[in-house]
Image 1: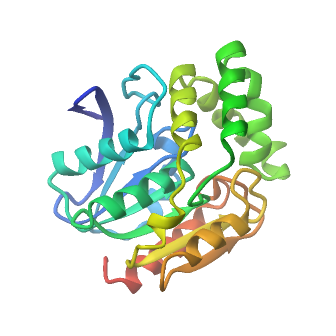
Image 2: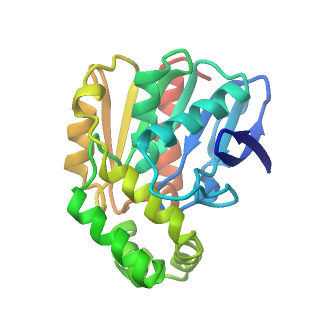
Length: 262
């Protein structure tokens, strides 16, 4: 684990793989940390420079005072990539991480060669919905919404298994301010127009049982980017890299080979 000190936030990040390899940067969902991708890392091709990080208010990163803006979240991954002297990376983002990937691709095409948009949208939910969740966290903590989040995150068989327990623990150990702050950033984000301006290799992945970003939303977002491809992982919820890591890695690896990144 390492710390990148940026203006206003200290980001925890980790590098794996070949330090001289083709870069791939992973951005996590709301309520998770960089361990979200643990299961797929051993399934990736050798020779990649793999970067993961905890966004503000999550994992081991610092938590500025909320609310946050999407511009701040995009700015911190931009700052980390500059700090690591990376160019032409593939950005893999899940949920809010997918929003961050879209924003970075528009802002810094020198940093981004391709994007993978997992379980995300150009706009996720409504301002009213996010404000309700922020109010719930502020009054009762994340525990007050944890069960409902698990229902959106995972398929019913996974919810009934002991495998769900660590992920519920990860969610509830997220700082309340971190969860509320990122929720505010999502609430204010609508990337339909900007994402439609993108012309870079794009893979969109959805889970058939996703209760947070349903497949139709992911498919609609993919359709905004010319030449993008949409893939559906059946039997998985909002975090298919957790429930179906082999299938997720297969789709990602095929995409990386198609664009000549491995």
